[in-house]
Each structure stands twice: as C-alpha cells, then as structure tokens.
Image (cartoon, rainbow, N blue to C red; front, top):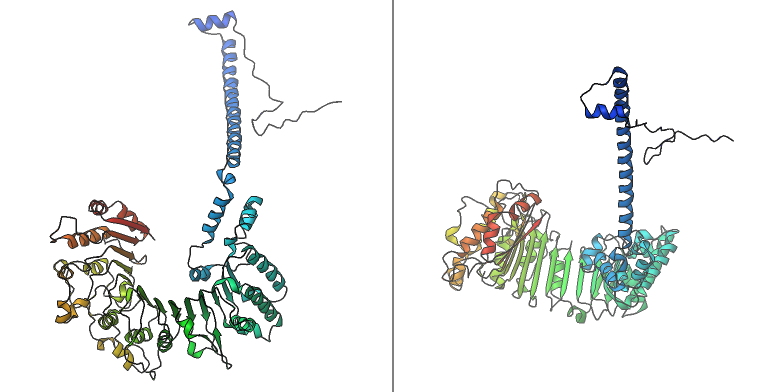
Length: 595
C-alpha cells in the first residue's frame, strides 16, 4: 500500500513534508585554505559558492518566517491561556453573597427617588432588565438575586402588558416578582386606570388589567408608594376602607373627558406625601383625603393644574413642609382669590416653582396669592424673568432663605434679607432665551460682588410678569406688547424702602450674601464659552468679596465651596487653570464637573 503525503504546509509554522533541507558543504582543506588566505577561488568554485549563498539566503528567510510564525502562535496561545486563568481567578467569583447583594442593590438604583426612578424605568416584567438579568449570569448570581428581597420591592405595571395571551404570562411573572420581595414594603407604580378596568371594547384587556390590579392589591398592606390611575383606588375601596395602612406616598394621574364623575375617599394612616398630575377640577374622578389625613401630609407636588385648584388644596394641608408646583395652566379670569391667605410651610419649608412653557400667568397668580414666612429653601425653574414676583413674595412673607436654586433667566440673584443665605445655585447660565438680561457668567457673578466692584450695566430692560398684569389680562396671559411692561428691578436691594434697608446688617450692604457657604454654577452646554475665562471670572468674584474686610486676609472669604458644571472642553480648562490653585490656597473647595 502506498501512502501519499500531502504537500500542504502547517498553518502554524509553515512546515511541509516536501521541504528538503539545504545541504551545507563540509569544511574541506580547500575551503579552510580559501577562508584563511587571500587566494581567489576558481570559476567552478565561485559558481558553486554563489549558488549556495542564494539558496542559503532563501533558506534563512524561510526559516525566520517559520520561527516568527511559531513565536506568534505560541505567544497568542500563551496570552489566551493566561487570560483564561485570570478569569478563573477573578475575585468577583469569590465575592461573598452579602457583598454581591449590595452591589446588585446599588445597580438597580434603589437610592434614586421613586418618582424619578419610575419615570425612566422599564416595566417590572421585562426579563431583559434588572433585576431579572442577574439570574442569567450563573447559578450563584441567580441564587443571590433571589435571596435579596429588597431587589424586588419596586414594581411597575403598565396596561400594555394585558390583553390576549399576554395576561397569563404577565400574571405569572408578576406573582413571581412580588413573591421574591418576601414581606418587605413595596413601592408600586400602576398605569391602569378606571377606563382599563371597565372598557367594553376589549374584554381581554379588561380582564388582564383587573387581574394585575387584584394581584397587586393583595399586597396593599405593605405598600409605601403608589402611583396609579384612580380605577385601582376605586377597586381597593371595595375590599376595605383601610386598604393601604403602610402607604406613604400617593401619586395620582387625574382623568378628564368623561361624563361620569365620582369621588374616592382614601384612608391611609401612614400617608405623608401626595402628588397629583392634571386638572382636578376637570377630572372625572376626584381623590379626596380626610381632614385627619390632610393634617399628616408634609409634602405635596402638583402639575398641570390651575392656580385656584392648587390654592384650594394647599389650604387644607396645615403641616405642609415641601410644596412643588409645576406647569400650572392659565387661570380662569372669573376666579377670585382671597387676598394673601397664609400658606404655612412648617420649617424647614421648601417651595419649588417650575414653568418651562411661555405662559406664566398660572404660577404668577399663585405666587401673588400666598404668604409663606417659614420657607427656608426656594427653587424657581423658568425661562422667563420672575424676580419681581419673588421680591413681592419676600416682602409679604419676610422669610429667611437659607437655600436658593434658580435658573439664570429668572433674574433672582439678590434678596432684601440676604444674610441667612448659605447655598446659592444658579442653573442655565448662557442659555438662549427670548429675554436676555442675565445670560453671561460675568453678569451673574456681578450680583455677588460688593457694590463698588460691580460693572455697570446701562439700559438693561427686563420684561417681568407682575401679579397685577396677570390678574388684569383677560386670558391671564402676559401682555403681548412687551414695551408696555415696566423695567424690571435687576437688583432687588435697589428698590428696598429706607425703613427696610435700615434693618439690614452693614455687612450685607458691603458683601451680598455674607454667610454664603456654597455657590453652584451650572453653565449651559448649548452656549459658546470660548471667549469666557470661567475660572478667572469666579476667582475675581471671590477676591472681590474678600477685599476690604477687617479680619485676616482669608478669614472672611465666602463662599467656602464652589461647584462649576460646564461643557467638557471648558471643564478640562478649569482643572488646569491657575485660578483653581489660587482658590485652593485661599481655602476654597472647588468642584468641577463636565457635561
């Protein structure tokens, strides 16, 4: 039998059985003589030597190529083997179950506020999201995730999960999800309304929605947060007048457009926070709280409602500490408010106002109708000037603010009583606006400098929204003719009466916000900052605030903490800026974050 050997070369080293080794002549006496003398070789010897050199050089190149290929292959194989062994030695594989469980809890975002979490989180039955995916890694991870019930305490259910064959699988997954939470308090978000529970157009969806609601309502005695449609509340009231004994936060989406209207009285002895979205006056279902429950509420958040509705609800909350008012609708001009009814925010009171749309009449009327002397923290987010309304609110309330968080467009940079203020946050510096009085960083910081260090701004007119104009407008909207609006007060202290001014501390007239501890500046990423030396502007402000004081050179420097949020390229420049080092030498803590 004849065996034929293939001439194919080895892919690793290039060897082939058909390769013949190069014959190397022996060192004869003749070769030794030619090597050790200057005697020339004859023609035959020269031809033989030349042929050997050519063949030998070719063989050298061939062998070097094979050697390199062998080395590369061996190198890659060794690297791969080492990497595999490193993976087998990965310390994550030997993490104690308690440590791994804490890592899981951090990743699912339990430290994030529930309302913020649910606004972006997928529904809880999505097997491609946390915490389900932990079980796909390995059996150990799966066991840890199952044995960590806190992972499964935030439940979000959407009405899109119901209907047809999806209902059965949704019920099975939801039952498993809730079971893994053990007996811990739940945070539940249910996007299932009364319409979904009584729809006649799709019976399968109605059955599915009812089934999911019923399953979650069996856990209502351990709910801490509930954000849902009112249909679920009405179903719960059929079971018990005390269906939510552990409920702490209730968020309700008001419904409109239905002829049928009815009310639900909620009984939740642990409820302290209430949020409503939508106009309660036009809602088909009204959620009512008893007087006793109203006295428990310390936090209230409302959006997309009218000022009169907000005002009427807030009057019923005597122990309110935090009030968040967002995106109020234009007010009915026929609605009349009692003048200056007190809104008591128990210290430390917090007032948050947000209006991103052009229409400012709703929030303007609301602010003009309240008095809140106990407020210590004020936040205003708007694209329109609002300093005049806040100035009047301060005059009525005589509050002592410790924290202010505003957008630059509002123009709220000074107070009649600026001594108590400790934290000042200014956002949206440099953002494009229809009104452009306070967009530059230099303008913003000028209000923090002593009066003698401020650069004058001539002919700056700021259209503002006063409560009188809002109330007199037929539609409750700002006047179209902006030229008819009076010039806004850029510096609130410039319009203070002599009697009020006399009550101020001498240090306040010299240095605005003399007790300012922390200054946060958030620069817009959409603005162009190439011609602005951010750190130099901030340093100039710090130095100006420290000049002329009677204490030590750096003893009275305020603020002691500066936080700057800027586009990445500008943030990198500030990190290496000499001004940062100088502020650190002065004892000022500097934080820089890139956008």
